[in-house]
Length: 165
Image (cartoon, rainbow, N blue to C red; front, top):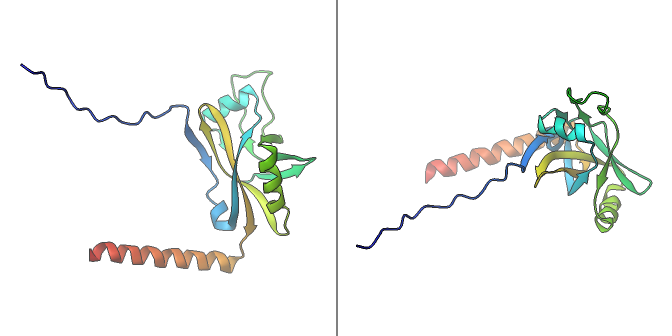
């Protein structure tokens, strides 16, 4: 008798060390994102443990170029309760890591008038903390309302097309 082989569908392995920690949801509403860049970040041990507990806020944060380096400022990472005297400051400046070629290209686009660097999201990739920084231009109130109206119209058209077919 021939044995039957079971055909199991392989599900892609989900890496437990790769997940989104937090997202700056207001950024896409308040700013027009011109360019995005993925950066590493220099952290201490207590900061990483606090980030693993999702005790981080990047909503008020921004990035600044100082002395040829990119720094993340005003990002709030809560203190880790079990780290006694080795704890970190909540809102200290943190250095962002990226290649020199990427930095030159990104700094050139961010150096224009009216442009600001804002963190869009923070996530783990293969156990490392990464930050997506966006070069953005601020939107006026009327631009924000126009964008909301166009998005609503687009959603209405898509819904009508779905119901038609």
